[in-house]
Amino acid sequence: MEEGREIEMNHIRLLALDFDGVMTDNRVLVDQDGRESVWCHRGDGYGIGLLKKAGVEVVVISMEPNPVVAARCRKLDIPCIHDCTDKLSALKNLAGQKNLGPAEIAFVGNDLNDLEGLRWVGTPIAVADAVPEILSIAKYVTTRNGGFGAVREVADWILKGDTAGHS
Picture 1 (cartoon, rainbow, N blue to C red):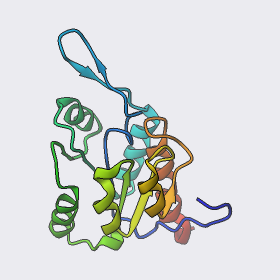
Picture 2: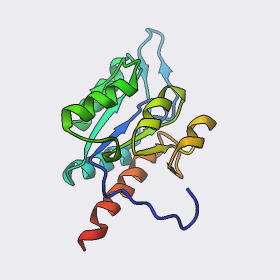
Picture 3: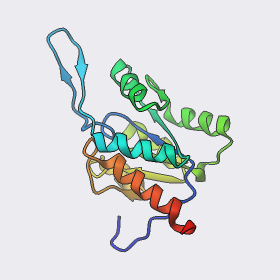
Picture 4: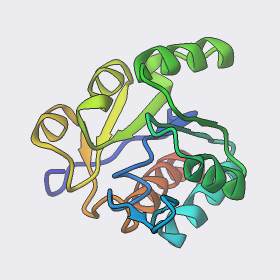
C-alpha cells in the first residue's frame, strides 16, 4: 500500500480468507504417518474474533482438502468452505445467500487460485508475500506475510474503517 493512502473499509460486511499462505505461512509439516500440521498466528484468530463482535462475517475458502482447515475454523467458530476448486463461484454463492454485492466483500489471497475471486470482490487484498500476479491486482497489500499476522492487520483496517464515522 502506498504511503499515506487511506484505507476505506467501512463498507465491508464479509471478509473471505484463503487458508494456506494467508492464515498460514504456506508451509506444511508432514509426520511419518502422513498427518499434516500447519502454523497459525494467534493474533489472526483474535482479530477474527474482534470482527465477529463488530458484526463483520468471516469465512475461509480454501482448495485444501485436509481436515486441518476445518479444525482451525471450528476453533475460531467461523464457516469454512474447503476442498473448493472454484473460489469465484463460492464467493458468488455466499453473496447471494447473504444478499451482499461484491462491493461489500473483501477477499484476502496469496496465489493464482485466488485470482478470479480477487478480481470479483470490491476489496481485493494480498498478503505481503503473495505471488506477483496477486500483488498486481490487489487494492491493498498487507505489510505482514501470510501466517504472521496479516489477517490481524486486515481486521484492524476493517475495524478502524467501521468506527471512523461513528466517533
